[in-house]
Image (cartoon, rainbow over all chains, first blue to last red; front, side):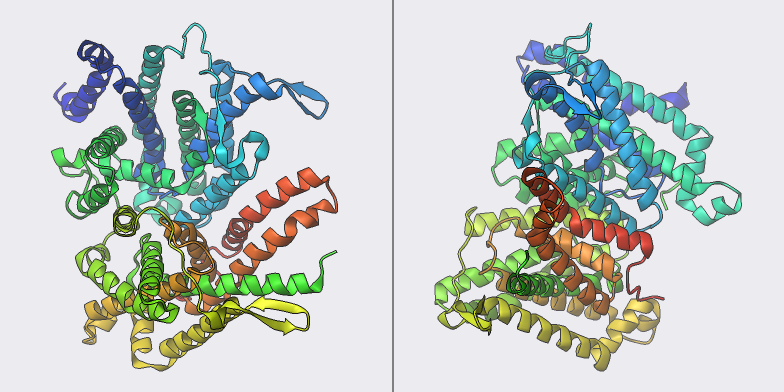
Length: 330
Length: 307
């Protein structure tokens, strides 16, 4: 019990706060804050996926915007074909669009996962700085691909006419959508906790700390890293599907490299390789951005130095403030 | 059919873009190779150079004065940034460096907006550079772009001589291959790092000032160019000036020639609308495809300096 409280106490408390927030917000007349809270949960989901490769695998991907944006575009393009363009004919088959989340969300996960499989298979041949840059290059390819697709809005992006329908849940209801985000985040955090405790997680951390030793032990390290990368990309795609539904709009901005940077910032700010780190990081960064925006239009003048100070003086991120890092990230 | 004159003009445009990329990449690849520092804010120094040049040129009425003001001003900004922030990052891992220099970008963009406003600045050319030169009979080409190519090639040569023939260059090369040994031999490594950082900033400011009359002087111009510059560095091999030079010309030519000719090339096989969509998509992706291909073929770039 004590161990459970120590390891999960703060994270579960924050989760509980998110679960109770809609009731509290309604009582205080802060219903507008649900959108911000949902955005935090979605980014926490994506940052959590990034944390699997970054924190446990030691792989600095600077291209996760590709998977985030791909998930968002799958939902938007399917809805666009459903509402506006009509079915596509591919190889004599008429494929209709859809606004059904039961089809669109799994497809978003599948497409993002396949993309991660291709990008990962090619990128994982490099390491260190070259890995950072090649993942960035692939994300930029996807970005420019969508910028130059006029059928799907090009630079202007696509508007969704409504949120996807997830019968029996009505996602146009903000409360239902909020709890869907929270539920998915809880589910995937639990899954991640299991995965990193299993053989797979230990192997991944072993590769992070000393890949040559793991190879010598007979571990197929490339396959482990690739599997983690694909899992990570697929879950990031799910977060993308959710963000498209939250904003009811997608544009190449979701695929742009500052999004990859923001996700990295969230992971580092919250605590690399910590289960709840991304949730802390997403909450802190988005709340900070929100508060600074209220304070001044020149909010980035303050956010920049804050990030620098965090790097210089708060190593281990927010999760590291409570206790020193355990088995350190190498 | 593609006319030879158009091909010549676009090739020169590609060279001009390439040498600009080289001016920016040279400093960044040295900082990466020697100090092992990923500096995302290098693009901000390029922006500072362009803004100082545009502002000083407007106030004084002379582009040359703007150019002369931009170099030391940007180098001074770089020294302050190095002493306050960057110096503390050399010993950190790449992730911390990415995050902190990302913070620097936010700061520089906002500070520039507060000083010079959100609207792009105009940078007018002096009359003697504003005309065209007939490179071949009946083929006029902007004199300024030719000047950029000339300046870029001259700087590349100067930098080569500096690195290969001088004491400072020897220390730079030694620092890149074994920094502990260099400092053990009694070289003030902190001062060397500050100097290299400022030198890189001055080169990127030169690129920013030269870019002003061709592209827009605006907030965020540093990030637009930063990513192609990283592509150059990675293709060339991190820390290699020679690699950066070859890769910069390769990337510049790929970018410009791809954009100019790929849509037309696809029209030979496809309908006009499909060709223009596919052509423009592929030409925008071309330099990233080039980089991925090079890395898959040679995971440490074309000229890895450490063998």
